[in-house]
Image 1 (tube, helix red, strand yellow):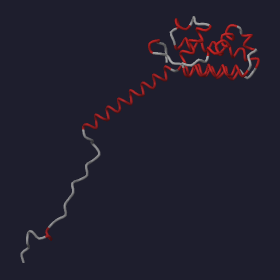
Image 2 (cartoon, rainbow, N blue to C red):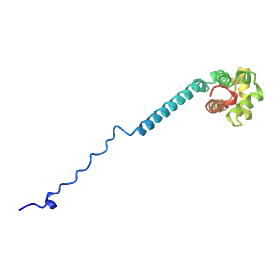
Image 3 (cartoon, helix red, strand yellow):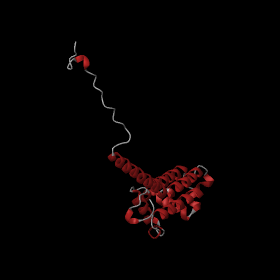
Image 4 (cartoon, rainbow, N blue to C red):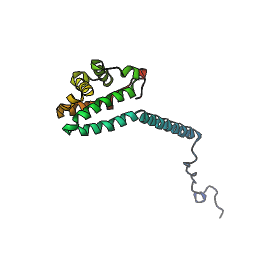
Amino acid sequence: MQQDPTSLDRLHDIVPPPAVPWWPPAPAWYWVLGLLCVAIVIWLLRAFMHWQRNRYRREALAECAKHQAALHDASQRGNALVGLAALLKRTAITAFPRKDVASLTGTAWDGFLDHTVREKVFSQGGGSLLEAAAYDPRSASSVDENKARELARQVHAWITHHRVDVSEGGAS
């Protein structure tokens, strides 16, 4: 008996093609990977530069913490307030152009501090206490501990939150 060439017995299963490999990818994926690497490098550089620009803030906050710790001792409170006033001035001179900041005193200094943090904090009491501490350390020793702590909190907040406009220059 001769076999029929169209017989179903002679059919073979369909052999599927091999799966598409993940590697090597299509050329467009190399471009996507390259652009992603460039974006990550740019982001890392910007983050590092931001971290470097804010070094003065980290150093000022560390010094502020030392002064805040000294506020608990009544005998050291005056020196701590004098230190906070000096720290605030040094930080402002570091962040902003020296010619704009160094000569400021009184209400002009308080207004500058309020303007750069965008809140009315120093012109409503805290600034006069800081100025008195800076120029008369003996009067700073008689400041109530709660007022001194509140002032230290305001100084800490200013160091943390002040903003330098690009047009003004300085570090931020």
